[in-house]
Length: 277
Image (cartoon, rainbow, N blue to C red; front, side, top):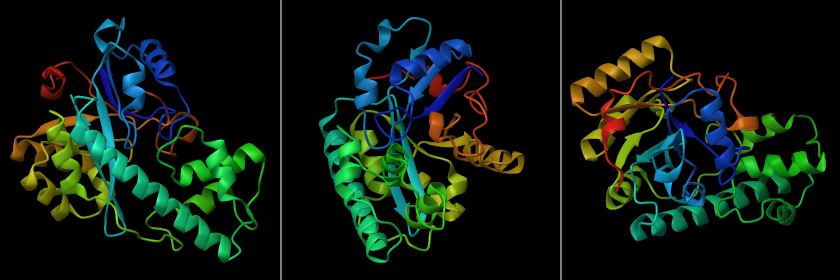
């Protein structure tokens, strides 16, 4: 693999620090990476001068978390100005919205007797986190060795904190158009992340028509046929092709079998040849 443009650090829901992600890239001979934390650029900014990093080129990135109905809709941003005021304002808003959504779901599950745990403890175990998600609830329970009655922690996470789960509570958050606008305002390239997860290609096309400039064609959840479909769509629409392993370290999904499971195979992809602002 030449480039891995989708990974998460400890600044969102990954278990590796940005420095550890750099080390993984060097160990796996990956030349280009993008740390695309959910709704934060703190991990990117923690690396300091990206041009001074030896052996690995880092494209400043982000993954903005939205919903389309009860389906995940994420927008990746590449070559962004990680200190953009417009982007910072959206991040702050979305982080508040996501944390409140998580708190509401947690409170509903607690009231239903799903578990006996403290929201204050979730906050305590997640110091410095501006955006609290179900992953952080699960992490806090793991830290305390807490067992949810009748189910594993991952089952609890899927039931209550994934949009497809029966216990999920939908609350207002920013949408895909907002995310596209914010990435562009930050001088970046907005890309529809793992389009399969939206489960509606009309929505994917709508995002491209609105202003998304690329598709994450290569993703570990995409089958060969789905990869070919989204590559054809990207070619037809003359938009950027991206890809990455969606690495979360110890929180990896079952499809993420290695750091290099999916990505861009060579240096000729146009997304790699854009100058970051």
